[in-house]
Image 1: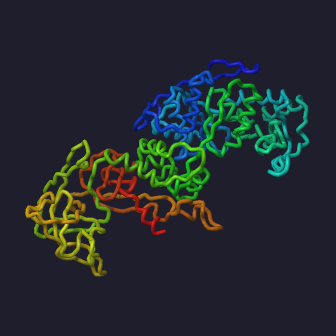
Image 2: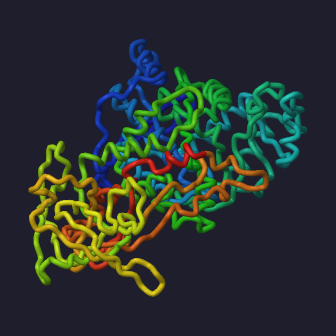
Image 3: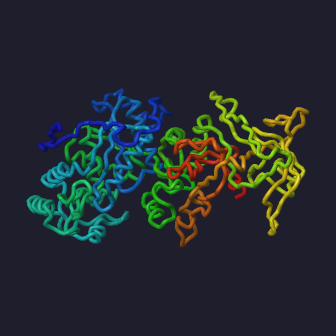
Length: 589
C-alpha cells in the first residue's frame, strides 16, 4: 500500500480495491445511476464540486459496526452514501467500525457485505478500523506529545463525576497534569498489555468547562484484553468511536462524513481531533434525520433482544425490519431504494408511515409478478351437474389487461373445487355479492355457478357447498347478458397442490412501540397476529417454479416461495397485502 506522511507520522493509506459482486451475493438489480430528488446534503456536495473545496472527487463511506444485521435505517444511509458517489462521479467505501472485540463477529461482516450488494451497490474500497490500530496509536502518541491527551487512572465513576453536569463545569482529576514523559510511558505500557482492563484510559485534554459535555476530556482509548475476530490477541488498546471514526475518515480521504442526528454533538470532537492531529482540508461531518418507521423498532439493541428472547425466529425473520428479513419476506431491493428516495433526506427527525413503505412494495411488484389462484381457507364446492372425472383446462391470463406482458396459463377445472371460506355466508347482508344459498357468482376464468345446498357436520359447521354450473358461461360470460356482480377465485380440489402460507403482518400493534404504558416496554406492543400460518391449496402451475419466485395471489396479496419450500411441501411468505388492512383500524381508533 502507498505511504503517506502527516506531521512526521508515516502510515499506510489503503488503496481503493473493489471487490466484485461475484465474490459475495449479487444484487437482484444494480442501483440505477439516475439522480433522485435533491436534498440539502446533495446541494452541499454539488457546491463542493463547483468550488473544488476538497481538491478531489466527492468521497463518502458507509461505516457499520459488525455487531448485528443491517436494518431499514441502514438502508437509508446506504442509499444516501452510495447514491452521492454515483451521482457526482465520486467513490464510496465500506468500512467496518470494528473497535469493540466483545460484540463483533465475522458473520456480521459477511451479512453486511451481502446486504449492501443485494441492495444494488458496490463499494470502491473495503476497509476495517481494526487495520488502522497502529496508525491510530501513533496519532495518540502525537496528541500526548503535544499536550493534548493524557492517561487517566481514575475509575469510570470518578471520571463521570469529574465531568460535572449540564449546569456545572467539570473538575480536573488528579492525573490531568501528568508530564508528557509519564503519559507516554503509561500509554506505551498500556499498548503492550501491562495493565488490566479499566486500569487506565487515554483522554483528550480539551475543555472541562465546555457546554458540550462530549468535549469535557472525552475518552479516546481503553484497555480491552479480548480476542478480536480480525486481530486475534495481538492488540489490547482499543480506540473509542469518537477517536477512530473521524481519523479513519481522514486516512481514507473522505470528503463528507454523513451520519444521523444523534451524532450532532460529536461533531465538535470530530473536528477537534482532525485539527489536533494535523490533517489539512479534512472531512466535514454532516448530520441528517434518521429513519423512524411506524410499527417498527430500528435499534440493534432492541432487535437483538427480539432475537435472543425468541419473539422472532432470527435476524432474517420476515417480520424483522432487517435487510435479511425483508429479503426473505420477498421485498425486492428496488422497492427499498424507491422508498428511500420517496422519504428523502431531512434535517429534522420525523416518523414515516409504514404504509408508505408498503405502497412502494406494491408499486414495485404490481406489473412484474404473475397472478395465480390460491385458496387460503378451503371450502369444498361440488358441482352436481358437472361430469364426474372430467378435467377442463381453463385459459387464465397471468397479468392484468393493461400489462405489456400478455402471458396465459392453463388452470384445471373439475367437478370438485375449493373456494375461500370467506367467500360464503349462509345468511349474508344485503351487499354481500359472493356465494350464498340461491346466489349466483362468477368463478374467475371459469363458469357461473349457483349455490343450491349447504352441507354441515354434527357441530353445525359448513363443510361443503353443492352448486350447479351453467355450461354456457365458460370463462364467465353469460350469453343471455345477465349480470352477476360477484367474482371469486377457486382451485380444483383434485388437481391443486397443498401449501403452507405464512401471513406476515406488522410486528407491533401500535405505531410507536416505545409509547407503552408505564412499567412496560416495547415488547408489550408486539402484535400477536404478526404471523398467521394457514394451510391452503394452490393451482398446479407453480409446481416447478424456482424457490424465491414471487406471485400475486389473486384477491389476497403478494407472496414469495420461502427458502424452505420444496416441490412436495410448498411454503409461501406474504410480502404485502393488496391493500392497507390497517387503514380501517386507524379510522376506527
